[in-house]
Length: 457
Image (cartoon, rainbow, N blue to C red; front, side, top):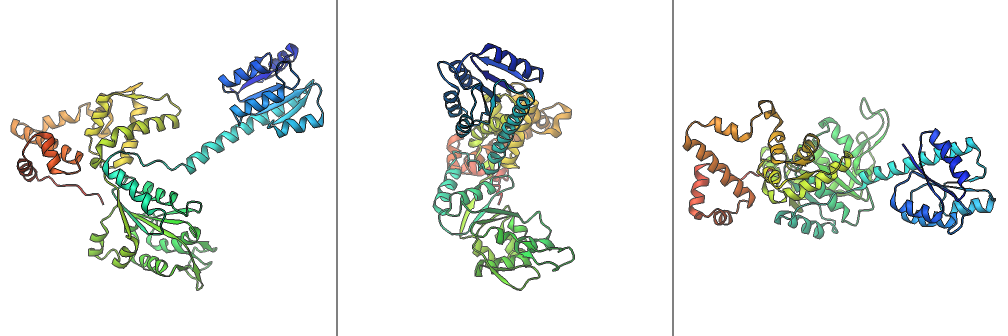
């Protein structure tokens, strides 16, 4: 229900307007004068204000100016028994939506109110959409690896150097690429993204370079490719490790000559594009297999930024979790939920194979399924949905799995050492000192349990 404030020093006018608007199912409040009206506007959020111009203490024009300074998008309809064209023009210049003379015509009043409220909704929706489109999330984290990434971006972004971003799925490669663009001299130009893994190999060349009408069966009209669309800006080639060899050859030529040719075309088109590539694959291994061109790899990897897995930066989980709670609750229009320290510790114990994306989804699940406060029991219950049907925790599964004490003890010891090694980014000396054992003893344990550092690249 829309909330409307009427500011008028004439009681009869206020009562009449209120009666009409409440009959139309609007929520209406009254202010006896401009001073009181401004106080209410400072305390409350109104969808629309109807304001008289000629009032004692503070006239409507002054109320309009001061109110719009507080809430710039609030629609004002000015009303006056002494209306002139000059007054209407002045009110419009100061930001009023419309001007109505007293006594107001009922139909004109209701149409104007409806139009003002519709405009207000459109303005709000536009702002929300722009915020979603333009917002580039900060790279969150205080771990050494994340600080190094931010420092590298600051150094590299202002240059024209090509950047290769590596890391596991969901680790935040796209975000790093976006910040390379945001902090570059090309930031006012477009950032065009291409997911090479999502486009069939027979269409990737058309997607990148465009095509001429009639160049193949479904080419019913000319199409501009991503290279041309990104001219002057940045082209993000996401999951480039999945690009076909024929497309790789054309990309290499485009990087060498700064020229492209549309599929089915003959004319060379000059392009000025900065390339940022991203991949979850080990491109050097792909080169060994014959799946990736070594010359293209060297062109792309002028600067390599590796994004660590979430398991390698578990100390950042509390910061990320609190950010996601605030963001998701706002998105879902829910009161912000609290999370206990025990729940946070439980999150830090999880194996985050899906990295940041998995954590985001987990937090969304916890917000939906838990009560006002997210507890460690909630995390255990909802961490792995596939276990929910039994009602048993991960620990109970482990205890059922092992029948001998020594086997269970080895399991716990292995998981503890693995957790600490990941926490310390596989710094063996630091880990040995933290868990209070000799470094040689820790190496023996690593060998015994066949522990290996998981490289998600």
